[in-house]
Image (cartoon, rainbow, N blue to C red; front, side):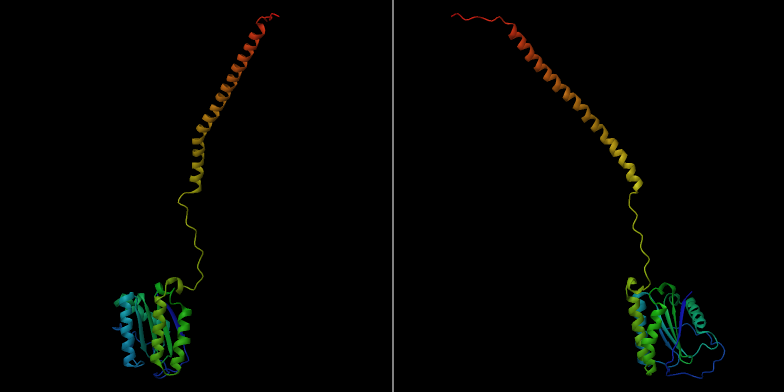
Amino acid sequence: MLRTLTIFIAAAFLFFCSIVRAEEAPIPPTPSRWVTDTVGFLSTETQQALDKRLEQYEKTSGMKVAIWIGTTAGDAALETWAQNAVNAWKAQQKAFGNGIVMFILTQDRAIDVEVAPGLESRISDQFVAQMIFEQMAPQLDKGDANGALTAAVDTMLKKLDMPAAETNTAPQAPQKAPRPTQKPADDSAKEPADDSAEKPAESKETARKPSVLLLVVLGALVILSTIAIGAVTLSQRPKTKTKQ
């Protein structure tokens, strides 16, 4: 279902009929062009230029941006009437359900912008309100319908072409840190295995130390024994007297 933004402006449109509203206006047939002006609101040159530009934009971007200009929605609420129109059109052309349609009703002095759900993050209510009141309304007050529509198309296409990160003005939710490829449990499971692998080496080293000490002690005992035996032997030899 399409999101609707309806904004009434105080600008004096160039063309409008009676302010008396009759019954609900019928849904117009599916437009065959990108800019449809049923009341002569735009000059022929501007209508053709905008139509050609929007046609080329759809071919390159895949997004449909269309403008429909009429007189009144009758007794129907504009947003309801506009939604019904787009729903009827997208049954004939799916592109109408995946793009943007701007409705301008000169008798009602109202502008309605239908935005597909997939484009709401780019074309927000705040953006459309700012575009209408700051760019379109001043030029419409001056009687410059061509300039107002040209400015609107420029603004919308520029916004659509912006990267998604720049068009989304809502606060971004904090992103979750990427999960580690190995869980802590796996690391802890590996540590005992590493310790167990090192234990045999340590036990070998500790096994070698007593044997070395034992050899040193035995060697010392052998040396001391040899010295002791030699001393005893020398002490037992008879002493010889020298002749005078």
